[in-house]
Image (cartoon, rainbow, N blue to C red; front, side, top):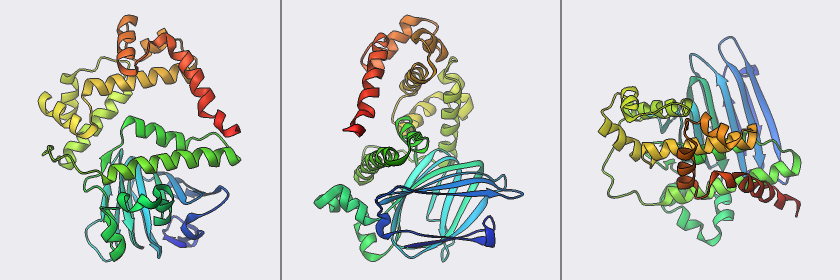
Length: 343
């Protein structure tokens, strides 16, 4: 399987990469592309596991950049856009096949690739997971046709397929999984085992999600400008967890009235704003205790709780146990998360 990428960003304006059939390998294979031109700088990191290929892009390009992509093998691509905008357009089409905006994801099936990738944003940060039908068969076994119900005819007819008409927002739990994959500190066989497990679990979850029937009770269709406004609200929330966050203030940021904000936010993020903020605060508090050495009281204050009792109630309501048990839970995580690698 061979991939050709054409761009003025590369030496001789072309980059070629050959992969083993179905990305199969017994080892972890890594390669980096460093870019340093007058208007574009950054890197594209490639990582091949057994049956999957990961591409992590982090590029600063104030005026955007394009890649011409050519390959002749069928592939599924999970694309996660952390920062910027991304689109893919077939060379024979005027309209893009898929568009993925800041902090969204989608999955596509391409029987082959001969088109243009357009990326905007400064920086443009993304993660892509590439895999073939063979990988789905190995994950799902004899039930793989159930996983592919919606895309089966496209695969048989050699047609491209986009899994979600409107790209989906990246929720906090998915964001954490993706960051764990990108920032994996391990090396060698441990790294391969850890990433293989993480990526497989992620693929299973999203393949199941892609095959679910849409909620027939939901009639709400949001325009892109409204979704972008909601992303702006979410970014504000994440950057100000230690401050008071009111619906009234968030409505001003979104440019919506309060009722529309609450309704649209729940439609996109699957949670009320209050629950979403609380969940983010608890996750950040745990991270501060786990990685920064904060006491529970210090972590509570850092995420906006001046009253320890209020933090305790919110923590118990969200996670099901008291904050004083957190260190015991973290110890349990540390022994179960990596201990199995040494069996």
